[in-house]
Length: 416
Image 1 (cartoon, rainbow, N blue to C red):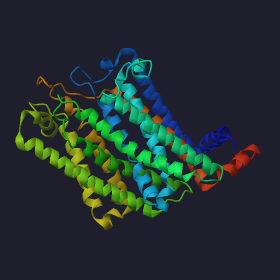
Image 2 (tube, rainbow, N blue to C red):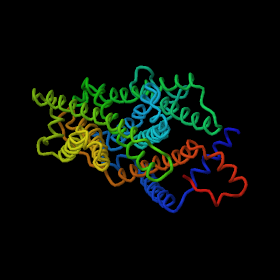
Image 3 (cartoon, one colour):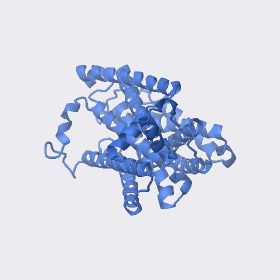
Image 4 (tube, helix red, strand yellow):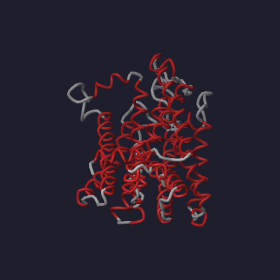
């Protein structure tokens, strides 16, 4: 069996499905087309002409999604660590789902960076031997290196595991375990470096905080497991792929503890800024209570805090956390609350007010929203295809399916 045959079989089985599957793919495809159209308008007219960005507010909803998705990608280690470090066999069975989510999240994060550049054709400036990355001095260069390296690691690990299972064998454990250890370190580093990318801007007091890195990690290890819990439950309810309840319970406990830590760090940040009432607190004042009559972000941040509080209070009580309906609601609340906190509650207020004291508010335009929906749809399509190719291989069905396809029995085959 060649690797090309494996790729062909995996792609073939991932595209087999019933009406619901093709309706889902049609919806995602239509949304992706809307995003591509919105981006074409942005590329033609320029990002400043089609977005709510300005000279005063240089980062908007694109960078907000980037910061959130890097956390989702890094959270894949919440499956890898208990599976391979603590040898949890139940979680080891679903590690590929986390790897697929990490790959999709990384690619979406890169697409959001490209969308925010305005002129992506100038990307060659950071290419080795062609442009100048200013490595290792530039924190942005570090971010580019660790994100691409993490994406490469996850792709290699995902397809290595799939290919060996496809052949009916297991990967060479010492080499694979070494890759797991490196992936854990890089996963932590990608979100830490992203936090440093913000906190190194000393002219932005709202970002210039020593606990920004821990806040990034805590929020990542909260929203990531929450999204994985929802994905695993959907997969378990709609396929033959078995997901043990212990996996859901372990991820729920991880999400609970990290959400508690995240809320504590947010409280520490609020105390530090509001107690002294210096001029450096103007950004957080604008975010939470408004500043000089401007208050467009106030409803966003209080909604985020309310959602996270409702989620953490229920998750902290064991009988309530074990209730699947509440757990799913808490996951949705957590994902939404963290997205707001790391997006509208972090990126935007860092620019308001400006170092000169000017206040220029930011509101995303319909072009930006269209591009965001398109990128999320493309990433969801990729995640869907990766999972649909992984499930038959994990169940041991793909080789049998391949033989039936070659014998002309494709009409009798259904993707599990």
